[in-house]
Length: 210
Image 1 (tube, rainbow, N blue to C red):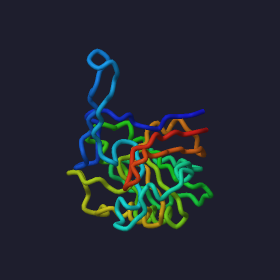
Image 2: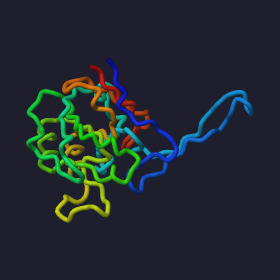
Image 3: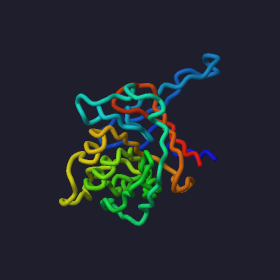
């Protein structure tokens, strides 16, 4: 079974605050040109995507430094749906595992496209370190493994991109904005091949194989 875990790319879709807006528009049509072409404007971290270390590390690896097999993961899904808005995922939720990727199933994709989506659960610095120590990539159905700044932010939350740095500095890839994680099992294969942009990140077609 193959489960599509990807948000579609479409005009006006939600992005990280301050990232480029997304536009998909007609460039050529069958009636006018005899063929159809769309023009697409988007940022490298649009929708369901993967972060390369160079996203936060100045001299970090770019996506084209990785072989394709690095984007197919033996993944373990961890159920975090009991956590609320802006609640930290503790280190105790990170299992000791022989998997290659920890998939955080928060259910927050239900809020995709709304302001509430920005107030997602996030990976605590201790949990991020535990993932990095095991060499685990991290994927989630949230906008960010770190807290996303909003007016609802708590003064006790970690600031900046601590989880990003802990993971990407350890060469652990980060995948964001997955959806539909209820369609896979607790152990599955995650395939998330990026567009061949070769830079700091790129949209992926994320597929869960059970």
